[in-house]
Length: 393
Ligand SMILES: Nc1nc2c(ncn2[C@@H]2O[C@H](COP(=O)(O)OP(=O)(O)OP(=O)(O)O)[C@@H](O)[C@H]2O)c(=O)[nH]1
Image (cartoon, rainbow, N blue to C red; front, side):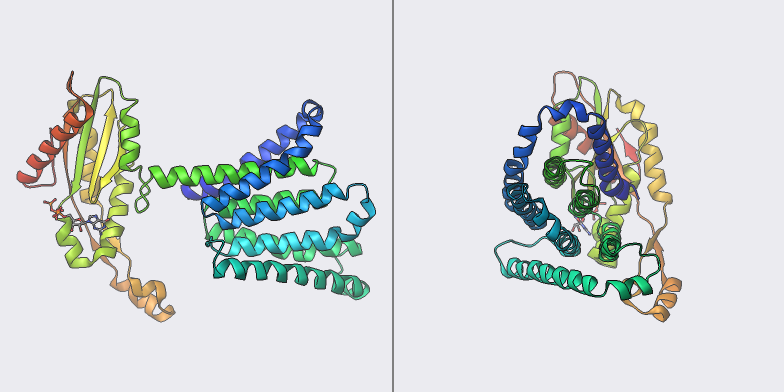
C-alpha cells in the first residue's frame, strides 16, 4: 500500500498541485512565453536520449512522439483549420499509443521488440483513423443507441474512456514510476485536447519532460541505493549515511540464525520470502534505528546519537517480534492453480518461524565506522556462540 501511495498517488498529486500553481501564477510566466514556446523542442529530445540511455524505451518513444506532435503543431499554428480537422484522430492515436505503451514492458529500443513497437504504433494510427471514420459515418445511429451522447463530438469520449480505464487498471497492477509517468501523460494529453485554453501545449510538454526525467532519476537512485529483494537501503546507502554521522552512534549487525539449514529445508524461494518478512520487521525498529541490508542474510542497523546500552531495548524488542512472528508459507500451487486447488492449498499452508542474533557496538572516539562495524561483528559472533536468538554488546 505504501508503495502504491509513493509510486502512483504522490506523483499524480504533485502533478495536479503543479498544474494548479502554474495556473495561479499564470501572470508571472506569461512574460517568459517565447522561451517557454521553444523549451519543449530542447527538452523533449534530451529526455528521449536520456530515456534511451537508461533503457526506458517507453519514455523514449513518448518523448519522441510528443516532440513530433509539438513540432508539427507549431509549424501549422497559423493554419488552425487544418489542426482542427485532424485534432480528433490525432487525439485518439495518442490515447491508443499511451495505452499500448502502458501495457507493455520496457525493452531494448533497437531490437525485434523495437520493431514490434513501431508496427504497433503504426497500427494505433490506423485504428484511430478507422475509429474516427466509423464514428463520423455512423453518428446518427450511435447517437440513437447511446442516449447519453450529447453531440457527435462527444463520441470521442468512448475510446478515451476505454483507454483511461485500461491505463488506470495497469497503473494499479504494475506499480512503477514509468507506468505512473505514462498515466500522467494521458492526463496531460487529455487536457491538451479537451481544455486547450487552460495551458499552452508548450507548458504541458515541459511538464511531461520534467516528469520523465524525474522518474528516470528516482528509478536510478532506487536501483543504486535500494536492495531489490527486500526494498531496504543497500550497503552503498549505508556508506552514504556514514558520511553524515556525528561522533556518537551505535552500529548493530544482525543475522538470521541457521539460514542455510532453512534454505536447504524449504528452498531458496521460501528463503527469499523470509528475508523479505524479516526485513519488513527490522525496518520498523524503534529508537531511530536505520536498517540496511548489508548482504546475504545480514543486516546493519545504525542508531545515530545513541550508545549501545541505549539501543538494547529497541534491539531486544525487534528480536522478540521476529521470534514471535509466525510466517505463513505461501503455497506456490495456490498462485497458479484453479479454485479447487486453491481451497485445498489454503488448508495446507505451513507456518514457520525464524530467529535472529544481533551484535551491537559503540563508535569509539578516535576510531572510524569500520572499527565500530568490526566490533558489532565480534558481538554478533558472541551472540551466535552463546546459543543464537539473542542480543550482545
Ligand atoms: N534465500 C536466500 N538465501 C540467501 C540469500 N543470501 C544469502 N543466503 C543464504 O544464507 C545462508 C547463510 O548461511 P551461513 O552464513 O552459513 O549461516 P547460517 O546458516 O545462517 O548459520 P548461522 O549464521 O551460524 O546461524 C547461505 O545458505 C546463503 O545461501 C538470499 O538472498 N536469499
